[in-house]
Amino acid sequence: MATLAALFSLLLRLFAVQPDIIVNNGGDVTTSFTACLATAGVRNVTSHGSPSYDAALRVSIQNLRFAGAGEPKPTAVVVPASLADLRAAVACARAAGLVIRLRSGGHSYEGLSYTTEDNGHTPFAVVDLAALDGVRVDVATSTAWVQSGATLGQVYHAIAVSSPTLAFSAGSCPTVGSGGHIAGGGFGLLSRKYGLAGDGVVDAVMVDAEGRVLDRDAMGEDVFWAIRGGGGGTWGAVYAWRLRLVPVPRHVTAFVVNRPGSVAAVARLVSTWQHVAPRLPDEFYISAFVGAGLPECSNRTAGVVSVTFKGLYLGPRHEALKILTSRFPEIGVSDLNMREMSWIESVVFFSGLPEGSSVSDLTDRVLHTKNYFKAKSDYARCPMGIERLTRVVNLLSEQPKAYVILDPYGGAMDRIGSGELPFPHRKGNIHGIQYLIDWTAEEDEHREEYMDWLRRFYDFMGEFVHKNPRTAYINYMDLDLGTNNWSGSDRRRSSRIDDDGSPNPEVEAARAWGERYFLGNYDRLVLAKTMIDPDNVFRNAQSIPPLVGRPGMTRSPRGISPKVTSNGTTYDS
Ligand SMILES: Cc1cc2nc3c(=O)[nH]c(=O)nc-3n(C[C@H](O)[C@H](O)[C@H](O)COP(=O)(O)OP(=O)(O)OC[C@H]3O[C@@H](n4cnc5c(N)ncnc54)[C@H](O)[C@@H]3O)c2cc1C
Ligand SMILES: *[C@@H]1O[C@H](CO)[C@@H](O)[C@H](O)[C@H]1NC(C)=O
Ligand SMILES: *[C@@H]1O[C@H](CO)[C@@H](O)[C@H](O)[C@H]1NC(C)=O
Ligand SMILES: *[C@@H]1O[C@H](CO)[C@@H](O)[C@H](O)[C@H]1NC(C)=O
Ligand SMILES: *[C@@H]1O[C@H](CO)[C@@H](O)[C@H](O)[C@H]1NC(C)=O
View (cartoon, rainbow, N blue to C red):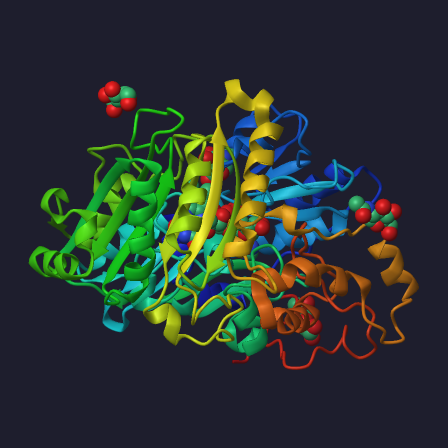
């Protein structure tokens, strides 16, 4: 595997001399960009207008809401094949004046890895990390180097091939990219036992806006903190993560059970779940999907509602059964059909891959059932009370296209401090809430109606959830919360009107949504951004803005001592 070899020789590459990057400023941006890439030896470049452009762009667009002809399109899609290619892609885009859209798995809920939100005024390029997908597991140290373009399925597969008793705590969808996922935290079925994906990162290699190649030491602890949960596309281009793997037993127990019923019956079950699931032993994860048109039920009939429980227990079946019989008999233990399997088989079981899929299918990067969707999120700190829950379930029973996913917190999530990573939603949160509505191409003419329904439902939920501020999870990105407005910021920066040290208006504007994702961690994120990318090269609709034009801040960032020079020739760690 060429990409594996690339990881193997990571240190060698850090010493490698890079070719000069020459930009032809005479032509248009696309011409100067592609010429620059050609000079740097980057081969896999597909420009707008080329016959393979559509395929190269669409391959990992995972929300069809952003695939339409009216969406802003990149001037080119570049697929770096090495660290040198990635550096060249960043440098050439910057030199040509293109905004960079890094894409790992393409699962951004708001399409931020392949489009822009300003009606196409800003020319941009997609830097697609699909070819940087190597995973190298070191069983002796229980760690793995993972290139950021590797999907979670590729990571899980490589770990399982190396050891039946090692795993990594991250999300359940195998086509999600480790680049974007870990950058936003990363919650999954092992998180009550081991925390988020970001909690398991021990080192990283990132290309910053200046083209420097920085590992943890070189980027400094503030930036290393920021990249593990502060959101993708903001700090630099992560080339690889070093993960600490976690132990799992040879056999785990898994089940999925759908419980249809009346609104009142479903509300009662969810209510019991709210009290039980966050307090189960750390080894037990049970999530609840609530809706009237869940994929498990073929009946998308208004008024018929159900809850689906997905359960994983890190231990044998008889223990799982004993725990549920005493703690959650309402789930109906007699027909749970709990099965013992290896951890990697449980990954396939919960992957959403078609029935009969095998462990090697986890390495398929392509999401085969794509749709149009909109999502929003919340956190709950208290159970809701049966009367309120009944109203919630009743609303869901009226819109079969919508559903809610409740992820149990507690366990390790309660024991990790809210400032350990940018992701702050730890102690005291009993579960996350994700609101989703999805539809097909034929139904897309009703898009606004569906999105409005979800927004009204979200408004209705406001009084029952965590408030002041109402919170959200960055990986369930929701642009309704507010967006950056960069138009005019270049002018501000060049005229240096903020040099007097007054608060940057972009930073204060972004606080409105930034504190909902990050609570008290927001200001530290702004400082980390100012250290690593004061010129705001890596930016999107919801990236953390830097404090611009502060004397002494932009050029000599405190706390960061780059040990790799911009030409990559020295590395003195
Ligand atoms: C079907 C589905 C299932 C999901 N399941 C879960 C789940 O179980 N748990 C959970 O926590 N989340 C889940 N998510 C949310 C998911 O974690 C986020 O959408 C995540 O950001 C996707 O990462 P990606 O690399 O696939 O996406 P991308 O769209 O490629 O990237 C997302 C963001 O990160 C940036 N980025 C990508 N690569 C890099 C890089 N190498 N360096 C720096 N920035 C980068 C992008 O520019 C973009 O801003 C799910 C999403 C979907 C669509
Ligand atoms: C470019 O990269 C993509 C993704 O890895 C790959 O499918 C494609 O074959 C590559 N094209 C060329 C010309 O190498
Ligand atoms: C669909 O719902 C109807 C009415 O509730 C029921 O009779 C039928 O069996 C259901 N079909 C399936 C496949 O569940
Ligand atoms: C963004 O900022 C520009 C310049 O400051 C302003 O003209 C424009 O109206 C703003 N756009 C939005 C959507 O607020
Ligand atoms: C690389 O950069 C360093 C410091 O910026 C400089 O001293 C050195 O001469 C450069 N090397 C090459 C080969 O350009």
